Structures are given as structure tokens and as C-alpha cells.
Image 1: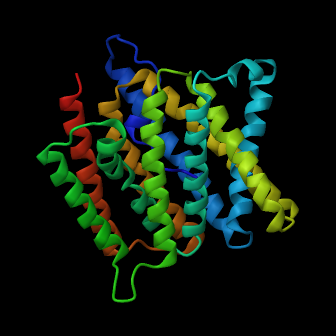
Image 2: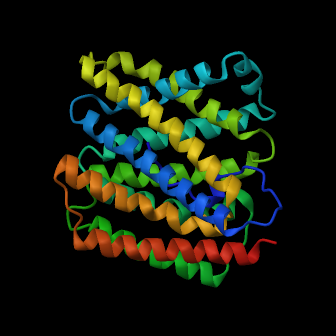
Length: 304
């Protein structure tokens, strides 16, 4: 799943060197490619969940992710999997598993652009949860940003007298799980290198999904196996582009471009699923994006 990656999630060590314009442009390019690959993964997942159980699609996303990492690292894999904080890595990986599973269940019945917009709430949930989990103080201005973000979410999900649909409910759970995942990532950002966390994410997700998927398994056709494996390929490519983006440009520059995922989601939704974003989705997305960027701006001002 292509969960919205906020800049808080990336903990690649910052290089204190002067960034020139070429590096900034390169960083923006890599961020755009990151979101393209992640939304491509989402589109593949939505396509597959029309035929196969969501847990089977979740299994494929993690299994092929891990398989490709093992092939890529080969003899370096045993050393890379060693963690200084195994318990927290396990908790973090479980949260990503829940995020993916909930997203894949939700996107079955929800347009891709709308699903991606609901995931934009993750940075807003991070701000709220940082108070009890990290002991952070959230000022009045950031609370205003949170409030506007929820106004945007109400416009997108449009709850009526019958309540929120099951699909939207799962997507909201995915956004909350992703927010907790981001906070746990903050807590371990200095404990292990990036590759260790990426390995744990795929490995634990593979194990958990493998325990459940036999009860729901539906044998794929030859062509669909390519889609299943393709999820692992684009997932790895997305992570590589993400690391590359933050290695050449500052987070404050890249943050707005992570919202380009809505463009990719709208294109895929229209071309593959004949989905056209509603005015409610576009208006709500604009409000959520604006509030998310404002919260990020305030955090950058407050963090030395």
C-alpha cells in the first residue's frame, strides 16, 4: 500500500551540506517518482481486490517485498536484520501490516482518489497522538490546523444519517494506524539504519499475512501472478526513491510534493476504474492538504 509518507517518517541521517538548485530539483523529482510508485502499488491492489480477498493482496504486497530484499541483499541480509530495538520494530511492523490490510479492504468499495485523500489525515493524527505518546506540546495554532483537517475529512467522507460506510471506516483506521506507525518510527529513528526497518516491515507483514491467507486463498491466474509480484517491485522502487529524495533535498522542500499522490490516484482511478473525483473530494483534499502543510510548517518552526 502507498500510505502517504510524511516527512516525519523518514529518518535518513541528514547531511549538513549546502544544497544547490540542481539537488533540490533532483529531490523533487525523486519525491514525485516515490508517490508515483506508491500509488501504482495502490492501483494494483485495487485491481486485485476486485477478484481476490484483501488479505491475499496484503500477503502478496509483503511477501514479494521481502523476497526482493533477500535477493538484493543476499549475504548481507543476516546482518541487516539485526536490530537494537527488536520489540519496537515488531510493533512498528505490525502497525504497517494493519495499515495495509485496512487500506486494501477499504479501497475495494471507495474510489482510489478518495481513499488516498483520507490517508492524508495521517499527519493530522500524528499531531494529536504525539501528545500522549511522545509528550509533545501542541500549541493553539496547530490545533487550528487539526480542526481544519477534520473539516476537510467531513467534506470528503460525507457522513449522513446512515453513518460512515464500512469502506471509509477501514480507511480511517488505516490513517490512524499509519499515524501511530509514524510516531513509533520517530522513536526508533536513531536505533537502526533505514534498511533494517524496511526489512522488518516486509518480514513481519509476510509472516502475519501467511498465517491468515490459507483460510482465504484463491489461486491466481498466470497474469495475476505478475500483478502480485509487481506490487513488491513498485513497493521497493518507491522506498528507494524516497530515500534518494531525502538524501539530496530538505524535508521542508519535499513535503508539498508528497501530496502529488492525489494526481496519480486521480489518473489511475479514471483510466483503470472509470472513477472521476467528486467536487467534495477535491475540496476536502485541498483543505486537508493545506492543514497538513500548515502543521508541518509549525513543527519546522518549533523544532531547533
